[in-house]
Length: 185
Length: 185
DNA sequence: ACCTGAACACCGTTCAAGT
DNA sequence: ACCTGAACACCGTTCAAGT
Image (cartoon, rainbow over all chains, first blue to last red; front, top):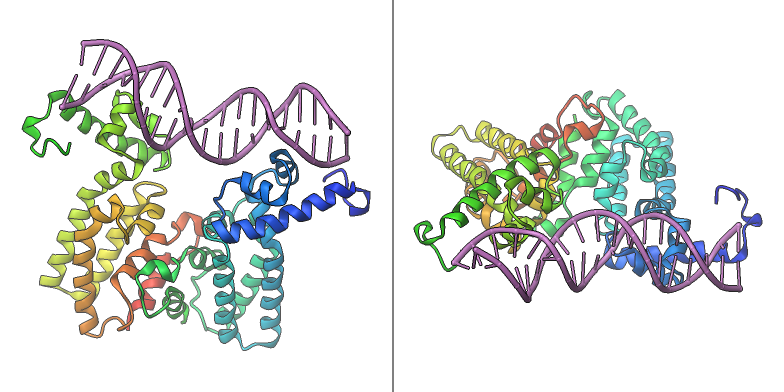
């Protein structure tokens, strides 16, 4: 991949396999969670184990590639809210989107929560999203909508780590609502 | 173990090995996190793998045994707060103790968060603590200190899942403080 | 009754051989 | 250049043999 920055120069089977792996990863992770044996992803894509590892050197690389599209949408949305407002309602809506996105693959939140900081493939995939959210949170802070001591990395990590509502014994109020109340200045 | 409910009837080496395993588990989990290879625990205790699995059939059984003492302390403390008050400050202090306790072993929060409900060994070890905390939260709810839609299982799962402050990029305000603000009615 | 360590199973990752 | 599946490594768990 490094040797072939432009798709045209890559062999047709390599291009085909890569998209088959992405599609298979999407289905298998959605069905069985991100900790499923990698072999299942390879089988679903109809390729050998080795081919999977050639395209994605680790589970996190595959997960990061799958999340990139979604992260791009969230980046876009954060910028739109900064430009158009309203800031508080936008912030709330954005965090709901973010939370929902992490629910798509069972087990993804653990990888995202620990991968947001540092140099993991996931950190790289989420970099622009983090920056855009930091901008949004900064504006909200300037308007006094959230406290001065809350950081973007903290909020992203905290919301990513929230237990799924299924795991909280049928509580009426989602955990995210509690955190949102706590954020509001 | 099942065949010998009273310690006196067990062979001396079995008794000795069990406490050596608990002491080793404490040290190794504290040093390397709860996902450390079980072999290290056995080696630190000076016994074979098989002996470890005879006493604790899985990693979760060992972790549950190690957490029992701490859970008992928290149970006690919750009852004291219910009896003596003050309820809100007591609730806050209790949740800080709970949060600190989970920080003792890196990785423990994942097992506790998912193990609180259900039938895991950890759920069994935490049962009395859950009940005592539910009582404490119920009293706070009656006084209108917390909202009516918050459940004990939810709060325990949520606080267990909070990212360690080291993972939030040096935020001024601990995540727990944000949740506590959100809980207060 | 209990202990031990070899053996088995599972899965992530690598790599020699093939096209 | 890329693919494949056999092979290796690691670790959780089991069990036959020993005391």
